[in-house]
Length: 529
Image 1: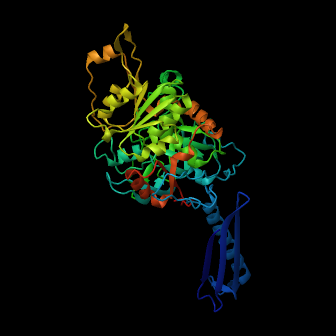
Image 2: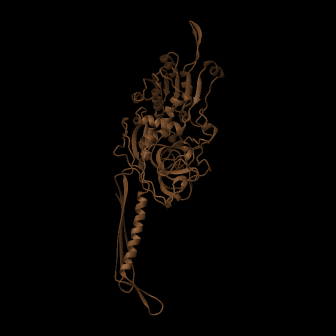
Image 3: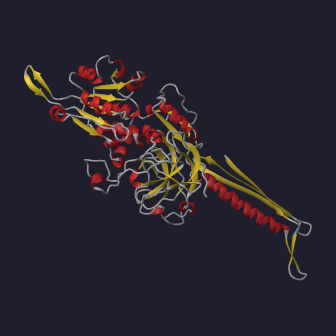
């Protein structure tokens, strides 16, 4: 229970009798999944106060009236503060991890955490769609906490920022939980563009719509959503095509419709967005093209995983490579994305899934997601990884996935996949159907080198896969349904959970390779400037 206590004393030298005391208590707690607000106020006055006007006339304001005025004032102030305390508090028990904050050892999955049904705010007879909300603060900026990256590679700074109201085609969402992806770390380390500072990172999240701007028809206050860095506008040629998931909008540090930011610090200086999401803030503003509505019955700390990493890996096997049943797969890098590729390949029916990594402990972890064989690239002796896997698969893997973000590994993966070859007995050409898919994000300017003859003669395919080739608004709900149907494994990806105050601990865990996904739970308290 949260309580606000106020004591207001007033009076002065007013004819000898002059004391007014008003006491108010305001608070709220949760009962049967709904907030209860209680405000109690007591006021009284002693004696009377006299005001001398022109001439000799005197007027007395009775002490009871003074007490009533103080009582009413305290009551209204307490009610206002209590309403602010309740506003947006949608997670039972506030922040934290329900006693399940992970340590540094093992990869024991943390149980899903359910959220309490959202409390829709009252409206004065008007629908809340399209931004027609009647709640006063919905049109105002929100002052809340955010973990701001001030300089490249330095710990995030917890500070208060101001989040502007949503503009046209935008909604403001309250972040319930967010998870740390290695892409956050990649951009956090960048000293030059596209590394921009100060910046609010974070792009894997689960939230609740707090308010909507104009021209928003598909979302309303209280809807549960996951933001996705890849836009799905549904209007451009690419979004309407079944052949691509790449919307024609480009990545920038700003909001992409009017090229301005919705974040400022308390000095009024601009704070940059990240991948249109910026989930390391209690509140953020997101364009509707980047939001996918989800069933509120899905645990937040599972749904947020599909904002980026897990969807990317599963989608790369399912949509981009179109892995076939009975095929062989080689995965370079068994981090969260590589293991998600293994999970996608397992769902597609691959019979042999080979994991490649420098950490032998990853094999035991990978077995949970269908990995059948393991190659430690540091223990291949004089042979390359590609030579080892070609020998293991009698000609190369059918599908190879590079999940680290190194051009040298892209080359190795390309060499590993099955190529066109000549058989002498009987004399014939064996087709090269091998496909290599690139998922890792390398540093800007990295180059790949291939001779034209090997591209022509080997018959292989090399392709990139952004967000696994998935269309966010149509494919992500399919994955969520498969999770709810107990087909898609998400629980095993969550190895740690921390509170928002410990967000830098999540960075330390991922940098040390001690976890797959660390879920960060947000607090519920915000201020309205």
